[in-house]
Image (tube, rainbow, N blue to C red; front, side, top):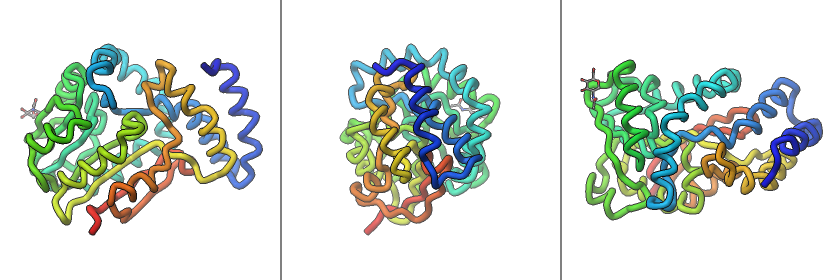
Length: 265
Ligand SMILES: *[C@@H]1O[C@H](CO)[C@@H](O)[C@H](O)[C@H]1NC(C)=O
C-alpha cells in the first residue's frame, strides 16, 4: 500500500522532470494524478458476485466524491469533454457501466431515440433514476446487468442493436476484462454505429507513464480507487478489440482521453 504522503511526494518529485509539459499543464497534471484513480463512473467489475455489494455500498457516497473533485474536473476540461464527446451520440444509445447516471445532463436528448443505462449495481441505477428527474430523458431505461456476462447481454439486446454505445471512465475498472468487453460492444453496435469512450489512460510522456505504472496497482487497491487501474494503454486495447479510432481528444497531457470509434472492418 502506498501512503498518501508518499504518493503526493512522488507526484511533486516527478512532475518537474516532465519537461515537455508546459507549466499550466503541469498543474493540471498534478491534480489529475491525484484524482485520476478516483475518477471512475463505473460500478462494473470483473467479478460480479464479489464486487456488487461493495459498489452498492459506494452508491451513497459516490456523488459526494464526484462533488469533491468537480472543480478539478472542470479545471481539467473534463465536463466540457463529456459534453463534446456525447454530442456525437444519436439514435438508440446504450451506456455501459452507467453508474449513477453522471452523463445524463450531457446527452443531446433530441438526437436520441432511446437511452439504455446499464449497470451491475441496482443502488447506483436508483440514483441514476433520481437524476433523470433533474435531467429528464423521455425514453430512458435502467437495466441491471453484468457487462462481462456476454451471453446474457447479447441475449437481452441482440447483435447490432445500438447506434451509439458509451462508456466513460470504466475501462480502468474492468481492468483485464477490457478487451473482452470492447469485443462485446463491437457485437452490440450497428455496422455504422459509433462507440464513444472517455477513459483514464497511460500518458505518452515517459516520466508520467512510468509514475503511473509504479503506482497504478497500489492505487487501484485503495478504497478511493474503486479498483480503477489508471495506466491502461487504451489505444492498444481498443484496436485489439477490433475497433477503429476515428477521433481522439486528450486532456491533462493524455491522462484522460475521449475517443470516437467505429466498429471496424
Ligand atoms: C425519466 O424522465 C422522464 C421525463 O420526466 C419520464 O417521462 C420518464 O418516465 C423517466 N424515466 C424513468 C425510467 O424514470
